[in-house]
Image (cartoon, rainbow, N blue to C red):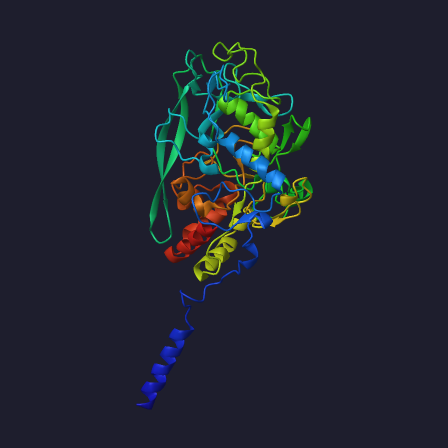
Length: 458
């Protein structure tokens, strides 16, 4: 009898020594990441989480921010008009907010020929005088698929999908859809060798903080030749900036192909809406048979509106993470580190001096290194953009990603919205991220759920 009791106690003891899936996973204390945007952090969980001014603005900055908010939502119409004239004659959409709904992420369009947050860049082999993409004759740098009355769009977009199956170690399978883009109903012949690259409108909050990271800090994060042998070789893009009149480090756009918020906004006005401004004073289709309205009213956008929109984009609040005390979220954060997602999606950054005090010298948590990485053939657009080659994309910030469904009503991710959820987005990773993807596929269902809980907490 005593022998049986001893054996039973040994069995119980051994069982108690086994890993408890509910309580003994490695976790990370996330307390220091609560202020995701430093002093610009907003503590709210509503559909307005991306479109609220930073709480630390001066009265004058807030006034200008609110004017910029109106401008960002303004719908442009054809000239002549007393209110918001200048749309077209060829364009992709008629307002900033149409491509960045509620200042968030555009969805993949249900009907690709309609106006949406998706557009196609175009160029031909070679580079311009600054090393940037070489514009395609008859189409420029971007294919405008809409036009005002009396004009013909450059083309309509077409997409076909190829299905790819990925299987986890536990046997769970996921079907990915790879989009293949083409142009139809073109107003003129597409030049030979033309390269298309899709882009979907990303969130616009927190841009001022990303702009204020010192260049030296980003340069230090580079490991272009993988000197540490970890398979990660991020590098900065360097691009021509018409504001500075020189090459600068790239910060914005899916390939870090723009150096400043001002240039990004001004380029969007002219390329996306056909609205000329002080930086870009020619119509998008200048010199094309369908591209000039002949009104001689350029620049169409007054400088005050551009200034207001720039400050608006610089000073939107960053939503705080949620549930950081939840052990499952903390476990997911540990898994994020363990499978090496954090090697590119670096949690912490710090700004230097900014003339806007609200974003000056702030510690914040965007989860990006702002660098270019080879993401493999699956995501390749095969179109170079300054230093970025056809396989490289900038590491996207992850802050706020878990609020996408609440704010924008969908969970479409990646540069063209092809991923229908976060799991698909991870499974599209290749190249330098292939190792992290394979580790993700080997996780148990419970571990995958923890990792997703962490991402959804951001």
